[in-house]
Length: 295
Figure 1 (cartoon, one colour):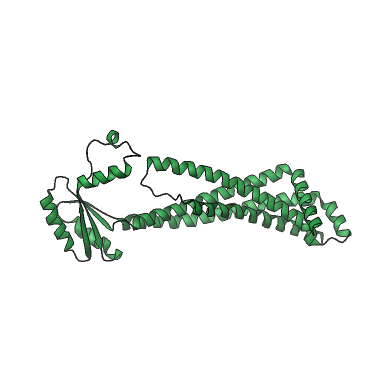
Figure 2 (cartoon, one colour):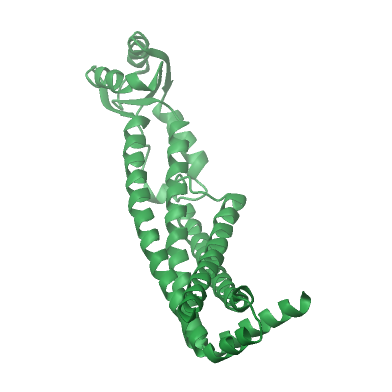
């Protein structure tokens, strides 16, 4: 048993050395394919995280005129609370909002250099009974006096959901096409190795070697190609993603990008396993076709 495994590994590495150039091409193709797949996967995960973050925030925000007095704001708050479907209305003064903004982003943004004074308006955070009535309530509030602007998370969520759907469809199609092209390259790479050793295979079969025995060195070679491609894509994507989120965290600290190392490790693991699967399947298809052709 162990002697067979040693023989399979020896033959796999010998084939790798003989066709080094084609093997590197296959590894490079697998790497590119998996990097694109990983980028697509991380994009979808981050968009989903943004939706979850926005959904957990306020239902609706109404911004009022900056010079509105607190007495008028109190009366407006009462009027807002009487709208059908509204369950809670919270008033945040522009002074309070600016203080909270400075506490959250003052360490990462030089606010005194970027902005002169307090640019924020008074705000009403409004909770409604169900998300379905958000557009109706928003329309009614926007028609009220002293209301400058109305925003609600549903608008953004629907736009991002549409974007995620488009990314999923387009990205899935792209990944399928690239994976298919990668599989063809792996198949052809292994096939060249098989054809180069056609005489050896013929002799092995003459002395009683089964097709399964003949296939294993080439399957192991394909697995090695896949693992190397998967590890290369993992390193490229990990360092690139870490650098990107570090820059975004400084420039746009309020964007909730995914930084959970367990989730990211799962993505990277999927990439390595995907590369391994591509190499193994490609090798199996290639050597099976050659052996079948030989009869």
